[in-house]
Amino acid sequence: MSERLRFAGRRLLITIPVLFVLSVFVFLLIHLVPGDPVRTMLGFRATPENIARIRGELGLDRPLLAQYGTWLNNLVHGDLGRDYVSGASLTSLLRTSLPVTLELTSLSMVLATLVGVPLGVLAASRGRGWRSGTEGFVIAGISIPDFWLGIMLVLLFTGTLAWLPPSGYVKLTDDVARNLRYMVLPVLTLVIGETAYIARTARSAVEEALTKPFVGYLRAKGVAEKSIVFRHALRNAGVPIATVIGIQFGVLLGGSIVIEYAFGLPGVGKLTVVAINQRNYTVVQGGVLVLAAMFILVNLFVELMIGVIDPRVADGAGA
Image (tube, rainbow, N blue to C red; front, side):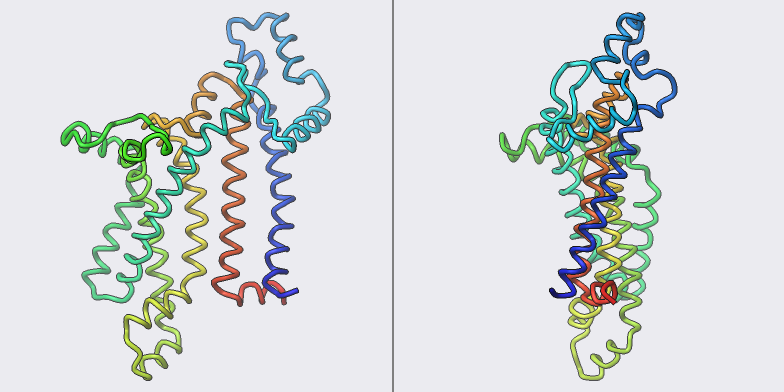
Protein backbone atom coordinates (compact mmCIF):
# COMPACT_ATOMS: atom_id res chain seq x y z
CA MET A 1 0.00 0.00 0.00
CA SER A 2 1.36 3.43 -0.98
CA GLU A 3 2.09 6.10 1.59
CA ARG A 4 -0.67 8.30 0.21
CA LEU A 5 -3.27 5.58 0.71
CA ARG A 6 -2.03 5.02 4.27
CA PHE A 7 -2.28 8.78 4.88
CA ALA A 8 -5.87 8.85 3.54
CA GLY A 9 -6.79 5.78 5.60
CA ARG A 10 -5.45 7.32 8.81
CA ARG A 11 -7.35 10.53 8.20
CA LEU A 12 -10.57 8.60 7.58
CA LEU A 13 -10.07 6.58 10.77
CA ILE A 14 -9.43 9.75 12.79
CA THR A 15 -12.65 11.26 11.45
CA ILE A 16 -14.81 8.44 12.87
CA PRO A 17 -14.16 9.18 16.59
CA VAL A 18 -14.41 12.92 15.86
CA LEU A 19 -17.90 12.39 14.43
CA PHE A 20 -18.76 10.25 17.45
CA VAL A 21 -17.67 12.98 19.86
CA LEU A 22 -19.67 15.46 17.80
CA SER A 23 -22.78 13.30 18.15
CA VAL A 24 -22.34 13.19 21.93
CA PHE A 25 -21.93 16.96 22.14
CA VAL A 26 -24.95 17.68 19.93
CA PHE A 27 -27.08 15.19 21.86
CA LEU A 28 -26.14 16.81 25.16
CA LEU A 29 -26.93 20.24 23.73
CA ILE A 30 -30.60 19.97 24.58
CA HIS A 31 -29.76 18.84 28.14
CA LEU A 32 -27.30 21.72 28.73
CA VAL A 33 -29.94 24.36 28.06
CA PRO A 34 -30.85 26.09 31.37
CA GLY A 35 -34.22 25.00 32.68
CA ASP A 36 -36.57 22.34 31.41
CA PRO A 37 -36.54 22.26 27.57
CA VAL A 38 -40.03 20.74 27.47
CA ARG A 39 -41.43 23.48 29.70
CA THR A 40 -39.71 26.07 27.48
CA MET A 41 -41.15 24.53 24.31
CA LEU A 42 -44.68 24.41 25.70
CA GLY A 43 -44.68 27.91 27.12
CA PHE A 44 -48.12 28.83 28.51
CA ARG A 45 -49.33 25.30 27.71
CA ALA A 46 -46.86 23.83 30.21
CA THR A 47 -49.32 22.00 32.42
CA PRO A 48 -48.05 18.98 34.35
CA GLU A 49 -50.04 16.68 32.05
CA ASN A 50 -48.63 18.23 28.86
CA ILE A 51 -45.10 18.21 30.24
CA ALA A 52 -45.35 14.51 31.12
CA ARG A 53 -46.84 13.70 27.69
CA ILE A 54 -44.17 15.55 25.71
CA ARG A 55 -41.35 14.15 27.81
CA GLY A 56 -42.69 10.70 27.07
CA GLU A 57 -42.99 11.41 23.33
CA LEU A 58 -39.43 12.75 23.18
CA GLY A 59 -38.08 9.99 25.41
CA LEU A 60 -36.78 12.49 27.96
CA ASP A 61 -38.20 10.48 30.84
CA ARG A 62 -35.69 7.68 30.17
CA PRO A 63 -32.09 7.45 31.48
CA LEU A 64 -29.67 9.70 29.59
CA LEU A 65 -27.57 6.82 28.25
CA ALA A 66 -30.66 5.03 26.95
CA GLN A 67 -31.81 8.25 25.27
CA TYR A 68 -28.46 8.62 23.53
CA GLY A 69 -28.43 4.99 22.41
CA THR A 70 -31.87 5.34 20.82
CA TRP A 71 -30.99 8.69 19.23
CA LEU A 72 -27.70 7.37 17.82
CA ASN A 73 -29.38 4.26 16.45
CA ASN A 74 -32.02 6.39 14.73
CA LEU A 75 -29.30 8.71 13.45
CA VAL A 76 -27.38 5.84 11.86
CA HIS A 77 -30.60 4.81 10.08
CA GLY A 78 -31.16 8.35 8.80
CA ASP A 79 -33.86 9.33 11.31
CA LEU A 80 -33.09 12.66 13.00
CA GLY A 81 -36.44 12.93 14.75
CA ARG A 82 -39.44 15.13 14.11
CA ASP A 83 -40.15 18.83 14.15
CA TYR A 84 -42.09 19.38 17.37
CA VAL A 85 -44.03 22.37 15.98
CA SER A 86 -45.10 21.07 12.54
CA GLY A 87 -44.75 17.35 13.15
CA ALA A 88 -42.73 16.97 9.94
CA SER A 89 -39.77 14.63 9.68
CA LEU A 90 -36.55 16.47 10.41
CA THR A 91 -34.82 14.40 7.74
CA SER A 92 -37.22 15.69 5.10
CA LEU A 93 -36.82 19.28 6.32
CA LEU A 94 -33.03 19.03 6.09
CA ARG A 95 -33.26 17.36 2.69
CA THR A 96 -35.09 20.46 1.48
CA SER A 97 -32.96 23.08 3.23
CA LEU A 98 -29.48 21.55 2.89
CA PRO A 99 -29.15 22.16 -0.89
CA VAL A 100 -29.79 25.87 -0.30
CA THR A 101 -26.98 26.09 2.26
CA LEU A 102 -24.64 24.07 0.06
CA GLU A 103 -25.38 26.32 -2.92
CA LEU A 104 -24.76 29.48 -0.90
CA THR A 105 -21.52 28.30 0.71
CA SER A 106 -20.16 26.57 -2.41
CA LEU A 107 -20.76 29.56 -4.68
CA SER A 108 -19.24 31.88 -2.08
CA MET A 109 -16.14 29.77 -1.53
CA VAL A 110 -15.53 29.11 -5.24
CA LEU A 111 -15.77 32.81 -6.07
CA ALA A 112 -13.65 33.80 -3.06
CA THR A 113 -10.96 31.32 -4.12
CA LEU A 114 -11.02 32.37 -7.79
CA VAL A 115 -10.56 36.01 -6.79
CA GLY A 116 -8.53 35.72 -3.58
CA VAL A 117 -5.73 33.43 -4.78
CA PRO A 118 -4.78 35.44 -7.92
CA LEU A 119 -5.11 38.67 -5.93
CA GLY A 120 -2.73 37.38 -3.27
CA VAL A 121 -0.27 36.11 -5.87
CA LEU A 122 -0.23 39.45 -7.71
CA ALA A 123 0.25 41.32 -4.42
CA ALA A 124 3.25 39.12 -3.63
CA SER A 125 4.88 39.29 -7.06
CA ARG A 126 4.03 42.74 -8.45
CA GLY A 127 4.90 46.26 -7.35
CA ARG A 128 3.95 48.34 -4.34
CA GLY A 129 0.68 49.49 -5.93
CA TRP A 130 -0.72 45.95 -6.05
CA ARG A 131 0.46 45.27 -2.50
CA SER A 132 -0.99 48.47 -1.06
CA GLY A 133 -4.31 47.99 -2.83
CA THR A 134 -4.55 44.38 -1.65
CA GLU A 135 -3.70 45.34 1.94
CA GLY A 136 -6.45 47.96 1.91
CA PHE A 137 -8.96 45.44 0.57
CA VAL A 138 -7.90 42.82 3.11
CA ILE A 139 -8.27 45.21 6.05
CA ALA A 140 -11.69 46.34 4.85
CA GLY A 141 -12.89 42.81 4.05
CA ILE A 142 -11.87 41.42 7.43
CA SER A 143 -13.16 44.40 9.42
CA ILE A 144 -16.63 44.86 7.92
CA PRO A 145 -19.29 42.64 9.59
CA ASP A 146 -21.27 40.48 7.18
CA PHE A 147 -24.68 41.61 8.41
CA TRP A 148 -23.79 45.31 7.98
CA LEU A 149 -22.35 44.68 4.53
CA GLY A 150 -25.52 42.82 3.55
CA ILE A 151 -27.68 45.76 4.62
CA MET A 152 -25.51 48.18 2.60
CA LEU A 153 -25.70 45.96 -0.49
CA VAL A 154 -29.50 45.76 -0.22
CA LEU A 155 -29.73 49.56 0.11
CA LEU A 156 -27.51 50.01 -2.94
CA PHE A 157 -28.64 47.29 -5.36
CA THR A 158 -32.29 47.14 -4.28
CA GLY A 159 -33.20 50.47 -2.74
CA THR A 160 -31.15 52.78 -4.98
CA LEU A 161 -30.46 50.92 -8.24
CA ALA A 162 -33.43 48.50 -8.11
CA TRP A 163 -31.35 45.84 -9.85
CA LEU A 164 -31.76 42.87 -7.51
CA PRO A 165 -34.45 41.49 -5.17
CA PRO A 166 -33.77 42.02 -1.46
CA SER A 167 -34.82 38.52 -0.34
CA GLY A 168 -36.46 35.29 -1.44
CA TYR A 169 -35.41 32.10 -3.17
CA VAL A 170 -36.18 30.04 -6.27
CA LYS A 171 -34.81 26.53 -6.72
CA LEU A 172 -31.94 26.18 -9.16
CA THR A 173 -33.79 23.36 -10.91
CA ASP A 174 -36.90 25.52 -11.38
CA ASP A 175 -35.36 28.65 -12.87
CA VAL A 176 -31.59 29.14 -13.12
CA ALA A 177 -31.74 32.86 -13.93
CA ARG A 178 -34.11 33.75 -11.08
CA ASN A 179 -32.15 31.56 -8.69
CA LEU A 180 -28.94 33.43 -9.46
CA ARG A 181 -30.69 36.80 -9.10
CA TYR A 182 -31.77 35.88 -5.58
CA MET A 183 -28.32 34.48 -4.72
CA VAL A 184 -26.22 37.44 -5.91
CA LEU A 185 -26.56 39.62 -2.79
CA PRO A 186 -26.10 36.90 -0.13
CA VAL A 187 -23.17 35.39 -2.03
CA LEU A 188 -21.53 38.79 -2.49
CA THR A 189 -22.00 39.51 1.22
CA LEU A 190 -20.03 36.39 2.13
CA VAL A 191 -17.51 36.53 -0.71
CA ILE A 192 -15.90 39.85 0.21
CA GLY A 193 -14.76 38.77 3.67
CA GLU A 194 -13.68 35.31 2.56
CA THR A 195 -11.72 36.73 -0.39
CA ALA A 196 -9.83 38.98 2.02
CA TYR A 197 -8.74 36.06 4.20
CA ILE A 198 -7.70 33.93 1.23
CA ALA A 199 -5.83 36.81 -0.46
CA ARG A 200 -3.92 37.57 2.74
CA THR A 201 -2.85 33.93 3.13
CA ALA A 202 -1.97 33.53 -0.54
CA ARG A 203 0.15 36.69 -0.49
CA SER A 204 2.12 35.60 2.60
CA ALA A 205 2.58 32.03 1.34
CA VAL A 206 3.75 33.08 -2.13
CA GLU A 207 6.09 35.72 -0.68
CA GLU A 208 7.69 33.04 1.48
CA ALA A 209 7.94 30.63 -1.46
CA LEU A 210 9.67 33.29 -3.58
CA THR A 211 12.48 33.48 -1.00
CA LYS A 212 13.34 29.79 -1.42
CA PRO A 213 16.61 28.79 -3.12
CA PHE A 214 14.83 27.04 -6.00
CA VAL A 215 13.43 30.40 -7.15
CA GLY A 216 16.95 31.81 -7.55
CA TYR A 217 17.95 28.67 -9.45
CA LEU A 218 14.98 29.00 -11.84
CA ARG A 219 15.74 32.67 -12.43
CA ALA A 220 19.40 31.83 -13.14
CA LYS A 221 18.22 29.32 -15.75
CA GLY A 222 16.20 32.06 -17.44
CA VAL A 223 12.73 30.73 -16.61
CA ALA A 224 10.06 33.38 -17.14
CA GLU A 225 9.00 35.20 -13.97
CA LYS A 226 5.34 34.48 -14.65
CA SER A 227 6.06 30.75 -14.82
CA ILE A 228 8.13 30.91 -11.62
CA VAL A 229 5.33 32.64 -9.72
CA PHE A 230 2.23 30.83 -10.97
CA ARG A 231 3.66 27.40 -11.71
CA HIS A 232 6.33 26.83 -9.07
CA ALA A 233 5.91 29.30 -6.19
CA LEU A 234 2.11 28.98 -6.10
CA ARG A 235 2.33 25.18 -5.97
CA ASN A 236 4.75 25.36 -3.04
CA ALA A 237 2.35 27.77 -1.33
CA GLY A 238 -0.59 25.42 -1.90
CA VAL A 239 -0.65 23.83 1.57
CA PRO A 240 -1.34 26.99 3.65
CA ILE A 241 -3.77 28.25 1.01
CA ALA A 242 -5.73 24.97 1.00
CA THR A 243 -5.70 24.94 4.80
CA VAL A 244 -7.20 28.41 5.12
CA ILE A 245 -9.81 27.58 2.48
CA GLY A 246 -10.95 24.63 4.58
CA ILE A 247 -11.06 26.72 7.74
CA GLN A 248 -12.94 29.54 6.03
CA PHE A 249 -15.49 27.10 4.66
CA GLY A 250 -16.37 26.34 8.26
CA VAL A 251 -16.62 30.10 8.89
CA LEU A 252 -18.96 30.31 5.90
CA LEU A 253 -21.22 27.66 7.40
CA GLY A 254 -21.47 29.74 10.56
CA GLY A 255 -21.94 32.97 8.64
CA SER A 256 -24.64 31.41 6.48
CA ILE A 257 -26.92 31.22 9.53
CA VAL A 258 -27.19 35.01 9.74
CA ILE A 259 -27.15 35.60 5.98
CA GLU A 260 -29.83 33.02 5.21
CA TYR A 261 -32.12 34.54 7.80
CA ALA A 262 -31.42 38.10 6.61
CA PHE A 263 -32.04 37.33 2.93
CA GLY A 264 -34.91 34.87 3.40
CA LEU A 265 -33.04 31.83 2.08
CA PRO A 266 -34.70 28.59 3.27
CA GLY A 267 -31.45 26.88 4.24
CA VAL A 268 -30.28 25.01 7.32
CA GLY A 269 -29.18 28.27 8.95
CA LYS A 270 -32.60 29.89 8.70
CA LEU A 271 -34.24 26.64 9.79
CA THR A 272 -32.05 26.62 12.89
CA VAL A 273 -32.68 30.29 13.76
CA VAL A 274 -36.46 29.86 13.42
CA ALA A 275 -36.26 26.75 15.59
CA ILE A 276 -34.33 28.66 18.26
CA ASN A 277 -37.02 31.35 18.32
CA GLN A 278 -39.70 28.64 18.63
CA ARG A 279 -37.74 26.77 21.33
CA ASN A 280 -37.91 23.79 18.95
CA TYR A 281 -34.83 22.04 20.29
CA THR A 282 -35.09 18.88 18.20
CA VAL A 283 -34.70 20.97 15.04
CA VAL A 284 -31.87 22.99 16.61
CA GLN A 285 -30.17 19.72 17.46
CA GLY A 286 -30.47 18.44 13.88
CA GLY A 287 -29.36 21.72 12.31
CA VAL A 288 -26.27 22.02 14.50
CA LEU A 289 -25.40 18.38 13.84
CA VAL A 290 -25.58 18.78 10.06
CA LEU A 291 -23.57 22.02 9.96
CA ALA A 292 -20.87 20.67 12.29
CA ALA A 293 -20.62 17.38 10.40
CA MET A 294 -20.26 19.29 7.13
CA PHE A 295 -17.40 21.29 8.63
CA ILE A 296 -15.60 18.12 9.75
CA LEU A 297 -16.06 16.41 6.37
CA VAL A 298 -14.86 19.49 4.47
CA ASN A 299 -11.72 19.62 6.58
CA LEU A 300 -11.19 15.90 5.93
CA PHE A 301 -11.42 16.58 2.20
CA VAL A 302 -8.96 19.48 2.51
CA GLU A 303 -6.47 17.30 4.39
CA LEU A 304 -6.69 14.64 1.67
CA MET A 305 -6.19 17.30 -1.00
CA ILE A 306 -3.15 18.63 0.84
CA GLY A 307 -1.68 15.13 0.70
CA VAL A 308 -2.16 15.24 -3.08
CA ILE A 309 -0.79 18.79 -3.50
CA ASP A 310 2.29 18.13 -1.38
CA PRO A 311 3.29 14.44 -1.12
CA ARG A 312 5.77 15.39 1.62
CA VAL A 313 2.78 15.80 3.98
CA ALA A 314 1.75 12.17 3.46
CA ASP A 315 5.34 10.97 3.62
CA GLY A 316 5.90 12.91 6.83
CA ALA A 317 2.77 11.43 8.39
CA GLY A 318 3.95 7.99 7.45
CA ALA A 319 7.40 8.59 8.88
